[in-house]
Length: 377
Image (cartoon, rainbow, N blue to C red):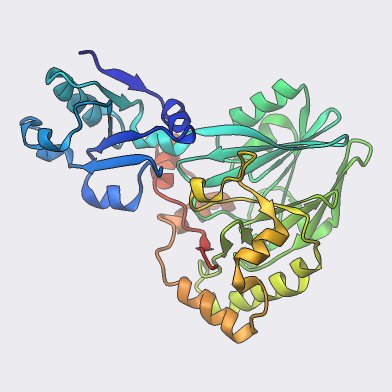
């Protein structure tokens, strides 16, 4: 039987459709435990490639004979060889094109909101749990928290026949490299970031803006300073309808404030944000975060990651009726979990004090999202 090549998109579509999959992951055990293709309908077998160099005979009793075997490795080469070995045994096999590197870089676009003033698209980076957005109004577009894959946003703007005129980053990201500065250079758009985040290149400081207007003031974006995840974190409140919450509020938790080594001090800022600033926003506002932890747990019926603020408050006890002492203790305890891999180097690149070639950027970003104090309900 011939071996099939599968793209990250094809596998994600299968996951999204709830199909039962069998994945043979031939990366080493630590890498597999740390990060893998997630899905409730997926069955896994993890056997490092080096254990299979001499053949697949010893694992044949663990491999289903009646369904396709999807073989996955880091970059593609090892999985292709193992898939061919299994195919020689008469099994239906495929491998992930580009390996987990391609899984880390795949984004898909989903419309999340539309009215007579604006249309909003969410870009889901499924292998990283990162979310970015495009707000379209009239002939212009605003991009929120773009990934480094700038062509995706330019193509989306072209599809909508609009020009990207504004780009905002809610904070200095620690788990992925922002595309904000490059996208601004490529499109001529204004790029906004909090000055307090310490970036050394030219941008428009959000401290100087209470709102960003474009297209006949049909789309208002009010920057609410919401420290917590980082001291300069902001959220963006759009037309009293949507809250782009950055890494401050997630569908299933709050942003982790420990990446600067000041967990308790920044947790007090996060408490002030949640209890004094966000508490003023009504329950029917839709929260659109910059990250998620588990796609299948957090995706809503409409097919995107987002939830009303009222529902998030219900699900997360930490967001109501907590004393500041209990809140800080809870957040500090959760902050003892692993930090995002390479986060200091990634922050250096996003700040503009370090540079990295494309291949280095790929390596730095490999791995899961760890920016949240998740599942606090």
